[in-house]
Structure formats: structure tokens, C-alpha cells
Length: 115
Image (cartoon, rainbow, N blue to C red; front, side, top):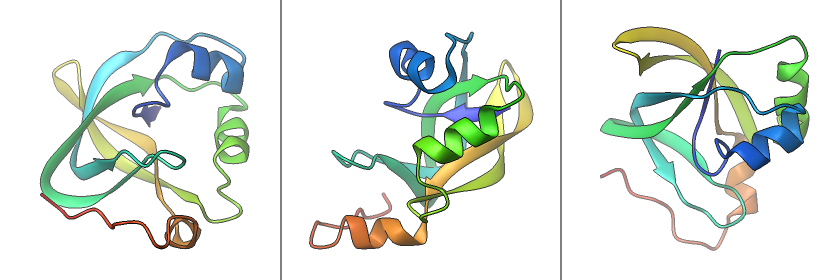
């Protein structure tokens, strides 16, 4: 399972990256905050905050497609398995969070504050 957040949970984006239009399940990631950066939208830890997105059942090859699209090997994003709430229960899902190179990519821009 993957948890996706805006704009990465849009059907056109998913069809381009994964080669299919998967069924999305509304979901929530707790204790993270969404940062709406124009080039690199991402999530960062933030106690008490939540990110609304979608739970996406994964298929063989999805891991490679996600990691290639998001520059995981370059450090822009990193993949963590986190608890997600969807459909009245808790799931473990992969989430792409801000990686160490993202700080360099957004340098000189205002850092988000945990609200």
C-alpha cells in the first residue's frame, strides 16, 4: 500500500507515473504536515497535524516507478512505512516524505512551521 497526497493523488499524475488509473481510498496521515511547495510538495513530521490524501493498493513495479519519479536515490524524497487511517481502520503504507536533498532544493525559501 502507498499513501499519496496532493498533487500526487490526482488520476492524471498516477496514470502517467504508474501506467494505470488505480482506485483511490480516502485516507489520513496523522502527525505530519503537508507543505505546498510549488516544485516539491512534501510532508514533514508535525505532532497533532494531519494530511488528507489517498491510500493506493500497490502492484509489482510500483516501488521502482515511485522512486524513479520522486528522485529517492538523489535524496529529494525518502520512503517510510507509516500508519494510515482509511475506511475506519489503520493500515501500514509507504509514504514519500521530505528527504535530505530537499532542504538544498528549497533553500532560500521560507521553511514551514509546524502548526
